[in-house]
Picture 1 (tube, rainbow, N blue to C red):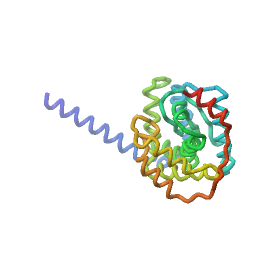
Picture 2 (cartoon, rainbow, N blue to C red; picture 1 turned 60 degrees about the vertical axis):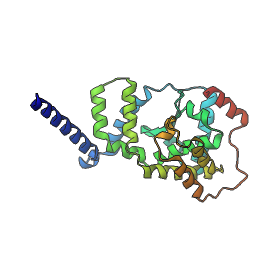
Picture 3 (cartoon, rainbow, N blue to C red; picture 1 turned 60 degrees about the horizontal axis):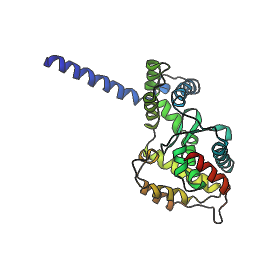
Picture 4 (cartoon, rainbow, N blue to C red; picture 1 turned 90 degrees about the vertical axis):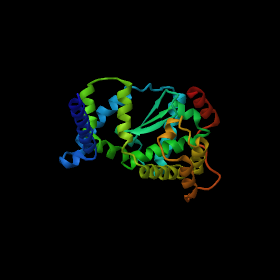
Length: 257
């Protein structure tokens, strides 16, 4: 019996050891595969997993204001508007995330928690930065082997657990250094829009380190993030512009609550 347990323990150790080693290798680079072909196809399959668990919001009272903020952000920062696809998901989970295929998903739960359009733009800008800085694409390449195995094993499964695992695989490649880089770029994005970039710091301070909120528990210490934003130099000065009318903002909030 002891021998059996020992063999099982060794097998488990070897399995996870090999799995860990596999995840440390950029297999597309090692095998000289073309990232644009393999990566794009893998991204399509991964997006199928993620999108299958999303309940998309199609209300114009929500989608149009979000599209407007993202469009204004792209124009102000010289970003191709076609380089990002926005999806609004109906869920109380306070979260937003950038994912494969240049998709940016924002939950109604996050929208309803924002005090104003600038804070919402800050959250969108942070995720936009992950896309523009190539963080998501690099994470996909790093985890290509495990993602491919997951897809092959589960086939066309629509399991919410599979979706969560897939999202975690992508986020696992986002280091604290990349998070700070996305914070900085996101703050500059909204500054270029002539919005008050310090609202990003206020947003972090508002939620402090509340681990009940998904969007903030997966990131670095929010007080440190707020302090770093306040130390940055921004060129835009008061009076700041207003993009959405108060009526449009309130109508969006009402739908998202």
